[in-house]
Length: 154
Image 1: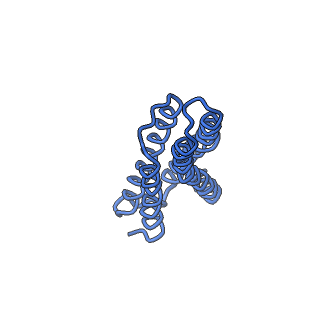
Image 2: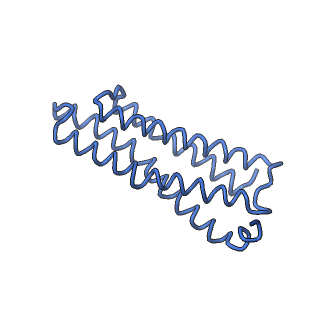
Image 3: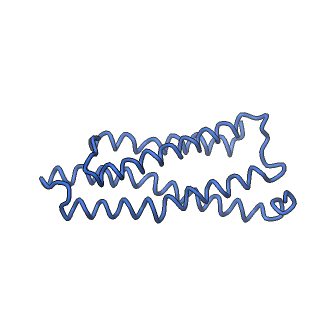
């Protein structure tokens, strides 16, 4: 199996990068949709169940289910395949542990966003647009840590 992984390493790495790009796009965009959802309803003076609310719910559900969830799963699958490839990860270094912590953080943030989508659907969102804007910075900070760890290999 390890010989196979070594022979397809460039392909696995390419698919991993593509998966991560798609996942990150969703992690950046979904909190922004939540900002628009919260502020759009407030500015329009409309409530849960309005056409605007249902449109935002549809966009949020589609982004999460059709793009983010598959991209997260494929990022994990291809990432674990890279980890299993001989000679790729030096576990005595700090960088793989930083990357692993960052990926776990991204996954946790993804789950927070998924739970928030269900809360929006039930009309139970309690966060403001400002809070969602601040939360929108979390994937950026995690991305910086992950990319620096992988590229610099400290």
